[in-house]
Length: 192
Image (cartoon, rainbow, N blue to C red; front, side):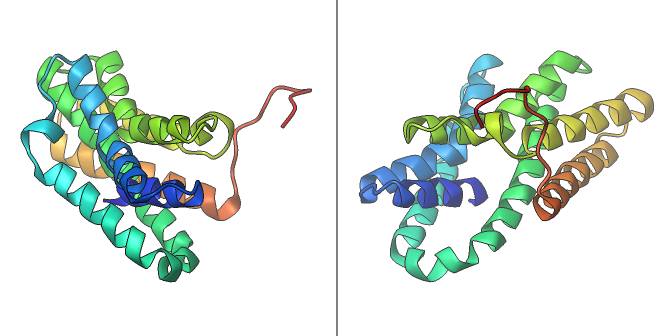
């Protein structure tokens, strides 16, 4: 839902009609998980369980009708997005862990795809360079949280503890980065 809301907001900002809003909300909400499942050779959960799409469409409809009242609360939605980032990154990593065990590349790929795949597609569909490539400490927060998740599993073998710590680490890093406007360095002489 958190990711679907950002997709609906982005669609409205780009003057989309109601179908565009619902489509972008759904893509943002489920595309990362669909890509993860496809890469890992699994039938996508978002297609086998209609609850995923029902939640994203419901979120899109709510934003369509309530946008003018909710846009002033955008910062609150960004906080929910940070929580969503932490949860999705570690859900994706856990998915890989259950399939292939302690394979760092699979855990990292699945975690990152789940966390940022939908947002990247959202930005591409509105013809923007994905924000995670040019601004914000977003992908980096996911990366650090997933690394923490992996090393706890590697050294302690406690999935529950690794999951909770990974979510907290990712979410906290994202929230702190938002508060202090952290961005990664860019190449000297770049146009931005």
